[in-house]
Amino acid sequence: MTDSARTPSDDEALVRVRGLTTVLSGKTIFDALDLDIPRGRITAIMGPSGTGKTTLLKHITGQMRGDAGEVWVDGVNVPALDRRQLFALREKIGYLFQNSALLTDFDVFENVAFPLRQHTDLPEELIRNVVLTKLQAVGLRGAAGLMPSELSGGMARRVALARAIVFDPMLILYDEPFVGLDPIALNQVLKLIRTLNQTLGLTSVLVAHELEAIKQVADHIYLIANGKVVAHGDPNAIAGDGSPWTRQFFGGEADGPVPFQYPAGDYAQALGFPGGAA
Ligand SMILES: Nc1ncnc2c1ncn2[C@@H]1O[C@H](COP(=O)(O)OP(=O)(O)OP(=O)(O)O)[C@@H](O)[C@H]1O
Image (cartoon, rainbow, N blue to C red):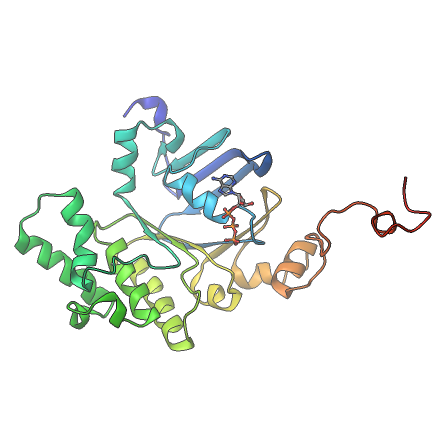
């Protein structure tokens, strides 16, 4: 890796986003966005629908590049990496999608073993040990022989989590991990996110809408809107800071900085009434 792709020191922040500007189909998603994801902590990214939360995760993994700015992960600037360096970086990042995305023709064991078989030549005995260790970590070693169709939504999410940590990542990205879970499964996933972050020394980034769940698990929240960070801080402090953004977002108010009305032309004119704007 060249020196120009490496920062001198990144002791506190594992991810450092600086001046990230991204325009997609003519729409500005990020407008000189700056944020830091601290090492070893759990950070939640929140914001109105379509604000670019998933897109931000894709910038961190290098699946997408912005039009300007820097995305430093563990001291390397992701947009400056070549293909080989990107693959090396991605092996250090676990990614948990909302729909779990398990392979339906493979049992639980093979789903977790899949990345190891794809990317390594490890002997079968070692694969078995790694897979069983990861399944034990999510409480599902006993479910190794089940097919995905035999799993509840919460179990499927935990199998996907076991698969996401199979390479012992430094960073794990959760995209909407709580959607569709009943309260018991939700609590199990929350507990796992916390435990894994602590025991495996991970850094976790969560994209989610469920404020109560976020309050229980996250150390820090970034609220993103209109391409920028509009609030950030401790979950309890930020939810009560009284700014228009946090009032609308955390209070679930229908109108506010995010307008209820989608931009439209003159109403009277649209209805054909005289006196509408010309
Ligand atoms: N590849 C792409 N090309 C064009 N537009 C895109 C692309 N990917 C995402 N977008 C647009 O970028 C915006 C942000 O999308 P993104 O999925 O990141 O939002 P989000 O904050 O995660 O939303 P939600 O909370 O609804 O999941 C949306 O308007 C989306 O339509």
